[in-house]
Length: 361
Image (cartoon, rainbow, N blue to C red; front, side, top):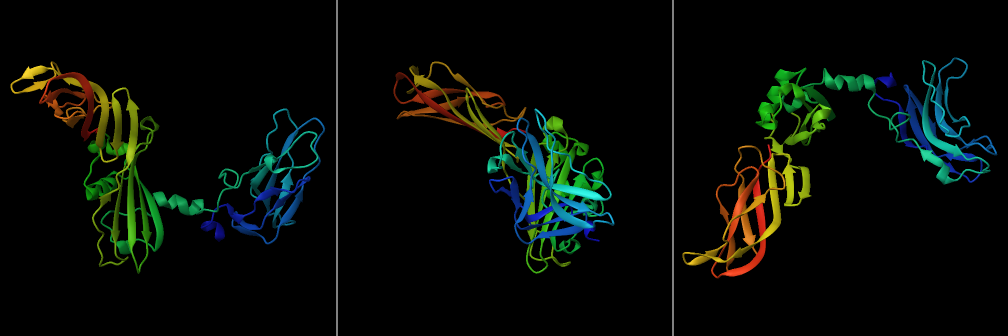
């Protein structure tokens, strides 16, 4: 029964530590293996075989579930490794009767008569060999199937507590489109087809307080580095059939940033890009009506281009009294021309500080 809703791993404690002898100790703690509970209520000492004079081995301290009729227990054991020039920890036994999880690796160093803390590698956090007790796979598999909701489902259609499900743009295209429509976005905003998008919907709910729902949109393919395109949140006052969800609010975050020889840039998840830099100096030594200006414009190439065909806002500032920067021509996606204007002539090329804002997608 318990294996229906709890997976394998440790709940708490069970840390393996050194005693500066050939013994190690397992602290108090609890674990869960294949539907069976383990509880260690006091420090447990386990013995490792003595070291070899010339060869090193790696032991494991494991919790072993033995479901054979003769045994029927969970106990802590030292699983002895094999001697080798490049020793490896022993494999874990996992079948219909025996199931082991590893708490730690312990190196038994050649010629050493005791174990110190440097020889112990904690494996409790490694999900492949132990890990925290989590939702059982039998339950987790349903996250991608029967637990899926539509964006129009009212809050009362969600259970109390934490609920999440996964939506595939290729397998649940119609419902996926409905979720995107509820937010006011579409795949073309990110240059993708619906089939190449995925999303997680995570809901935290309480029937007497507030529910918060998070929609995370991302690319499923490694060619796009599984890029996260955006995160949106909405809330309601209580889980009730008479309470509608509030409006979606985008949680904007930085998806890329960096520097080049022409300046710095930041790209945000909502598609906005900002660029700035101090790329050059400008003089104002050519007469122009009642003022002075640079004899020619200089080109500022953005550190990152803006989306093709998008006109970016651009401006500049010059660190000199009575002198300012002027954009010449319309900004485009790759850069902008700029020259200095001044109330007085000067040959000094004062630093020009540039800024541009637009969209990178």
